[in-house]
Length: 501
Image (cartoon, rainbow, N blue to C red; front, side):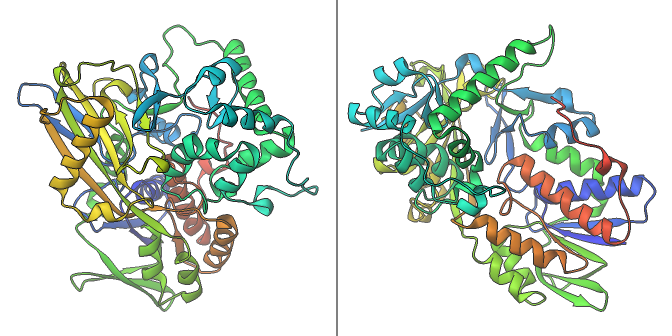
């Protein structure tokens, strides 16, 4: 069985590595992975650049981390023998600021997502007005919207982020924190974002506890109890909420490509069409070349997947087209430490949409991660675009880098005449799928149709989670579907996945 994988992001690489493991286990299966760009990794792109005065920058232009509690990346890292290369954030410098009327306000202690779990920090915070604080407290007494029938889930009671947060905590709670933290980071619009698709646990909390605040209080208590019960062992790896790798997140993509076999991977090869040929498949490339395959995995952006399957499964393509995508850019800038003579003990800044700024967020990478910049330098990345402001991306790379620099001057106090030691812009055209209301119902139908098409599987971040572990698992699941069609199963699939961190 020969499988063509279209797309060399972490989903496609996850599929390729799983197929290679099947081959190593003695099964007659091979693959060819094609990627339109000249590099692998997709939305994971680590640029490693030398500083003229010595040292180097490890600059992640796309995803820079994954949730530590999600085990897929840990599991694959162990298979590859690189688990020891994982690193956590520098939590001793962990602070987050929110922009309010052009000023930075520290996120109150005890906020879990956007719900307060500590009274005093909320009461003394300047982030919210007093009426907003009282309104948030009403979450404790406001009744549930509806009680679910037995067996029902968040999917049957989906609502938008705006609806849920305004209903439970009030408008200011949405505008000042929930929108930039949840919708802004994911590239969604709060008034359209599916809570069941992005954060189903929020709807579950309301059902179980009758309140988001009570739900997060219970979650915090559970976490504290686990920490007491399982204190860190001497010499054990430091565990933080987010994880990455010492050499940046692209490290895991490169190691998967090495293990899968780079001789089976072609970059700079764009798929233009997909068609059925008898019991097999044919993939057309931009240069006119045709690839024959027994099966195909489409691990591209969702809009590209819709174009590719439109000839063979129009109904599937139509559903894929209902998942919108937005574009964004990240600007990586490094400065002399003397150009920022202020406190560097923070990780990030969120900019609410109500602030009407072109920069949606800022990360101080050299304080968030170890060894991301040389001594005497700071490395910052700023986010631009997204559904709030697609027009800003019409500017040139040079203009966007300068726009980011001037925003850093205004927001954090970079010296006005400071020039970056390192600067690089990363563009992500239609790279952020948006999970709009009813997303899971659409995905259920997509998967129903896909299951009935022998030799075809979809993978990527547009379906059941945008996080790095979700995308990796989607590629593995796509490979498993096709292998199962010819009676191939791996022993690893029968083993219940356990916490490996």
